[in-house]
Length: 89
Image 1 (cartoon, rainbow, N blue to C red):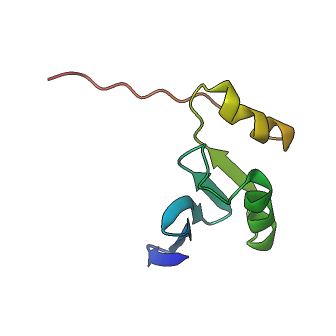
Image 2: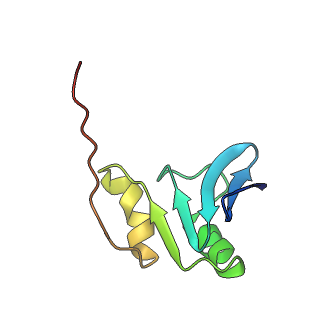
């Protein structure tokens, strides 16, 4: 785990075997990829959250039903749908 501080914010980069699993910022854990590295499952993430005072976990999951199943089985639900648009030059 790597810690970065700045402007009263502590950010921790959570890694497993050199792969970034998530970014902890305050009481939020952001998982940029829904597919977790080999050897890490959703239960590991929940255990980490409980041990590190994380109250919310935000997971970026593409619309892939296979990736959604383990999160749904662990009690996750869709909180928001985010789309990013960029104007072409």
